[in-house]
Picture 1: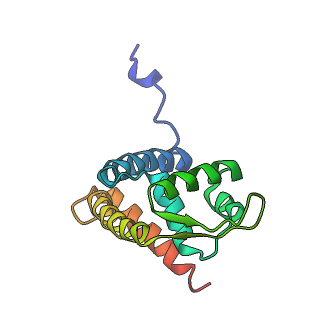
Picture 2 (picture 1 turned 120 degrees about the vertical axis):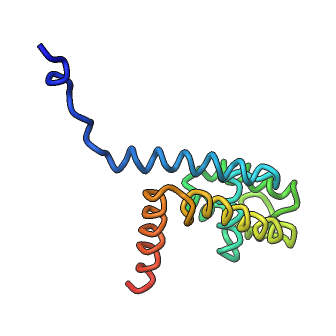
Length: 148
């Protein structure tokens, strides 16, 4: 009896698993590229949210980052200690506004360069053909939302 005929076929392709697998690779490579800047993907996301939304509150930052308000406070405290953001909280419990400092803006520019390098490596002309297609589909999908 042949064992080949009793072997199961390949598993169904799960888009969730494929995206998760690719996301982990992207996050790993991006964290490596950001490490010389003393940044992580998470810190970059927080800094980007703060830069993109003038007058951002802790509640808004937490919602945008899918973290708790307490975690947002801790993260902003870390970014403030590094001189990357300013927290204009008058007193505990009052409304606050968080803004990026000039040093934070400089770091964001450097992080954009690091991100572009990772993008080119993972999704550019020299990348695996499947990854090139994924990059094109993602860019096109999000570019088309501007027209909606």
